[in-house]
Length: 192
Image (cartoon, rainbow, N blue to C red; front, side, top):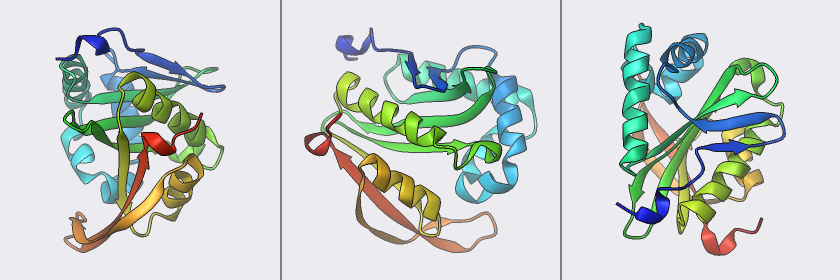
């Protein structure tokens, strides 16, 4: 455990969103978000969709596991909530943390009704700042499907650099193998 991380922020503000650590009883809202976006998410996040399943109870279990992982400094999962309506519209997750470097993988998604509004650009900029300044990471990386062009553009806009292609690295639910592209962002290239 790193005592320096005991007092990190659990809520990050952007101009239009609150990006905060999940709390007990957020499972129902998370289940609703997953259910509303299941068609999109099943190709990009099949494990997440599978873990949540079809019940709010499974979603609540997942949320409580994320809370426990946060407290144990294993990973950091955030919900993205709109300021005005307090609606849960997205998910951001720093995971696969290697504290010996330190570095982490980042994944995210936003509700289909809120894409291309610049919300995820705001959120990602704030999460990157959190990762470098509060978690003191040296590197954050993304791995995404090769055909996820919107995420490629977002990664570049935030400051990530393409690092390489991972051939046949991901199996879609239908069984087809797909390529991933890896993007990285290092502390030395980060400028607020």
